[in-house]
Length: 274
Image (cartoon, rainbow, N blue to C red; front, side, top):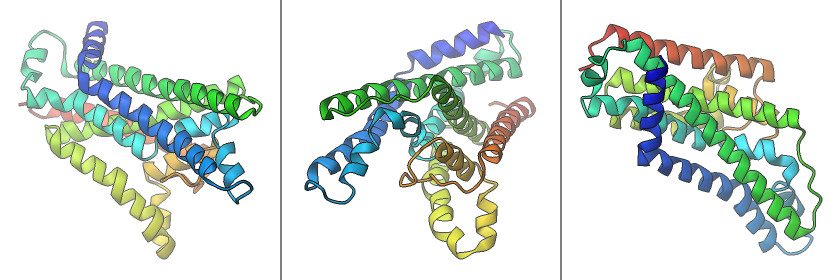
């Protein structure tokens, strides 16, 4: 088991696409969470409505919400791509046979991939918190504002929630790659769901149809958005809204993680990998 875990970690570290995804995640997070609100505050006339609010959203006190606010949608899409690449490239490169003839069982290799994905998603979440902390500290210092940091408990809760959401989307990408035995189609369908379908459900269909509103409360995106909102993520961020309580949101997202992971293992074990 440990050999499979270290091998999968080595694959992730040595794959340039993963570092590229991490860079995109950092740039998107900083741009939409800090740079655009700061630019809007700077571009507004003194005393204009929303100026103070835009600047206040970039302060250290909002670090937790700012760091996990993108995970239900656009940063979640990056996690999905990482999950697809971790598994789907084995089909594209026809390396499953080579890996499995070395001795480990399919479930052992799959468990190693999940372990590697857990490490990768935690790295992305920690990087988001670290870059957010540095950026908010610089902004607060330049504006002469006090640095009121979240408590250690709040930070750990936020990191745990962000890791849970990120790992759920990565596991979703992995199971799509196993089900479709490739990379392109799983990425395409996964991004369509994350960036289009669930946003249409949230913003268009749910306000019009009560049964759609009820349905979306059982979907991973709405629960991930509710979990992020409960920890301070801005409701102006796509996919963020307190549709359900924090307990339900946490349990539902965790349940989807277990289902995605178990379904991927079952499919990989039962089907031909070639």
